[in-house]
Length: 323
Length: 163
Ligand code: FES
Ligand code: FES
Image (cartoon, rainbow over the protein chains, first blue to last red):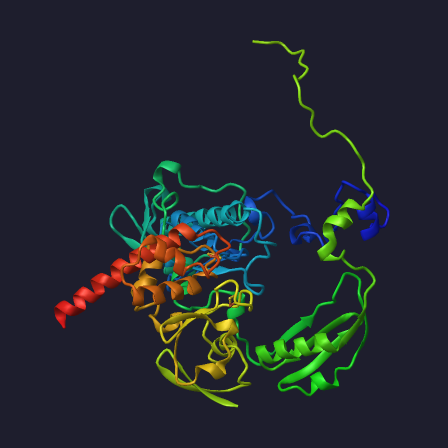
């Protein structure tokens, strides 16, 4: 149905509830340029450099990056498990940075059970490739084959007992290289951390008043705003005398842009109070109103209707084969 | 107007409209994160704190009613390094999904356990009637509260033994 759907045509459609919406702009990933080169696993395909996912400094401090956010689904813990497994380190050795515009890959929304699938796959493959690079560097240093070396506790040990730390090895490796399509992933039988239940790393802060939510951000010079919502769909803002509101304590500005009305104040509750006063001061012209809530049954009964059979009792007609 | 508040055992002065709900004072002035804004209408419990040991909705409690009374938030019970029994219990049982309702749940439970150290299942559920959880963490929350009761009991016994 391409005609302009408004409330009246919806109600007239009788029986059918038509909900129309469009998603604009599309998912962030779709906006990205098609990736050059071979297809890489998970989100590595879009963010192709190893150091976009994993960095190890000269002290051996490991930082892993994901473009996904912890929402209580436990991905912080799960992604740490994946990285620790393939890097042959302990979960406590990993610092994880989640969805940070300036630092992590842009992996779009955190939704649709995609975090482990896309980000987890990227991190797992990147971690395995970084581990291989560390092993290769150690093999070069010791003059051995990398297959003879053992990686554990951020140290690579040669058969003769010589050791090299991840930090010193990482300092000699450039991780700003494109990932390869194939990684030497650990075999399922050798997994130590993946597949185990670990205590969630985000819970302690959440039960002690730590910083855990976007509401907990307090930025330098931050002010608060509240929006005055229109009373009904398509209402237009006829007029508003904001002078009284602008004089309220803490109010910095009343913002009006067409039918958009909001207020900015120094303190959060000042913004709430001013928003309430502003809502009273605003005069709207309502174009589309909802049906009178107290008379919904009559309203529904008065709509155009279509009569048809939804169910019928009696013996069902059946010509199939009986087994 | 300057209002003197006792929050988590510290006396603090805040300069605010006396009608300001406690929740905004806690979060915006005192920079405490635990009490959460959920509905602002006394309907969800995510803003629950204790006032003189009673669980109250901080979103509908004007600060002017609190002078001379003791306000306790989750931060006042323990810290990440020295958690209170109820915090240890919630971590042990992993009783949080998004965790947004949890501080309110914990304060309602703490208020109950302080008055009634061995509540029945019915009493626990009754005390939590004012708190909603959108994630569906209820069974773990109940388990964590039972565990908190045990931990508080053993902590009290230890104190009595050594004291
Ligand atoms: S925010 Fe206070 S009850 Fe919902
Ligand atoms: S844990 Fe998410 S609302 Fe309760």
